[in-house]
Amino acid sequence: MVANKQKVIRLLKTARGQIDGLLKMVEDDRYCVDISNQIAATQAILKSANREILHAHIQGCVREAFENGDQQQKDAKIEEIIAIFDRLNQ
Image (cartoon, rainbow, N blue to C red; front, side, top):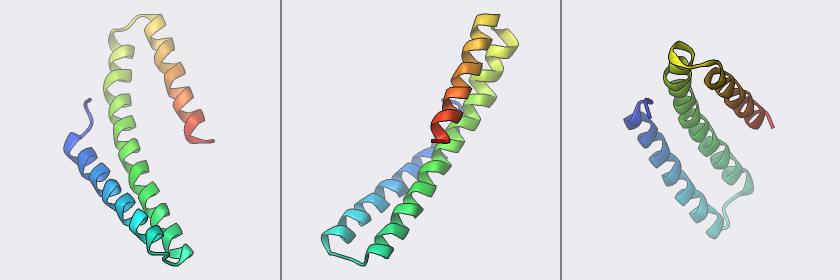
């Protein structure tokens, strides 16, 4: 992985901490809107981690395939990126 590994680890650990907090909020019967807001915040952190990883993938693996790969590798990377966009836009 060529992403900023420490940044990704920090984001994922923060999300894990927020999920632990969410479990406690549910167990404590906290206000639904507060729980929902925390879920949204956790999702934003996970999106940020995913964005970091995908940027690094495009700048590293995809760029390498286009600089050094054959047409089949290039086509595979294009299909991979299209699948990611499709999944993210569901």
